[in-house]
Amino acid sequence: MQVATGRLMSSPSLKGRDCVAVLDFSRRELEGIFEAADGMWRYVKSGTDLLKNKVLCTLFFEPSTRTRLSFETAMLRLGGSVIGFADPSVSRTVTGETLADTIRMADYYSNVIVLRHRIEGSARLAAEVAEAPVINAGDGSQHHPTQTLTDLYTIRKEFGKIDGLRVAILGDLRQARSASSLAYGLSLYKDIQLYLVSPPALRLRPEVTDHIKSSGLKAIEASDVIQIISELDVLYVTRLQKERFSDPSEYERLKGSYIVTPQMLEIARKQMIIMHHLPRIEEIPIEIDNTSHARYFQQAANGVPVRMALLSLLVS
Ligand code: NCD
View 1 (tube, rainbow, N blue to C red):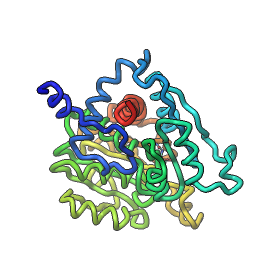
View 2: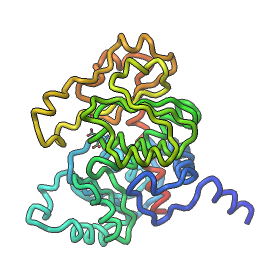
View 3: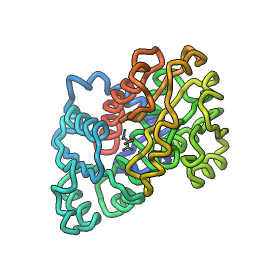
């Protein structure tokens, strides 16, 4: 009994749960996922049979490189199989099949569903339709929980903690779902100083700032990263979300409005890390890759053990 309780304390059962938004989990549950991810490194290259005979269905209605490939890798390394599509034009959705019907089928064919969709709320709808766990691989501009799990895990791995850190999120805070999702995730931690750095037109949306305020997370808005870079432990950079602008001239106007330069890094703390959900366009020039601050490729690599942990906790 004691042993069982002890296990539960460190790794709460998430079996059958959905992962639609990062706030679907408590801080303790996130810690359980991170501990499980630490344990997955030993299988990242060699594999295990933890999810043998289980099937993951990936439904990507929007483009993806890292998220889809890391989910597929994670499932294959866990001994399971993967079905699905990376391009909706090869699916029956082009003939007008509803998302709910597509999800019903995926539910019959698999044990866990990963969905990426342009429309906010799609993953919540899918979770209501499916019996199997549904994992949101990004819907609309607000939620991308597995990116946030990867981001928080990366920060925890670098600093040994998340509480008390000074974190800036830079760029397209209004439309990059990784940005809102990270702000939601950080609201579960203590004594974080958050800086929200963006051109005025790209500020975080009111529903996210309202949540931040009500959670007690200290956040300061700034328009230029140079004002605060010397304070930071983490500089999290986002991509200008070209495809989400309804007015292309607005994209052209904002293009290049925030770029991290090697000169800026001269006043940064030695231990400050630069993160990015990737893909980057021009906001982090390649010269930055060789600095001691760059962590975005490591961050992407961390996505595999984190997704292995999540899949194994939801499915096995
Ligand atoms: C992002 C996404 O689709 O939200 N990619 C990712 O998952 N790492 C970010 C982006 O496309 O800018």
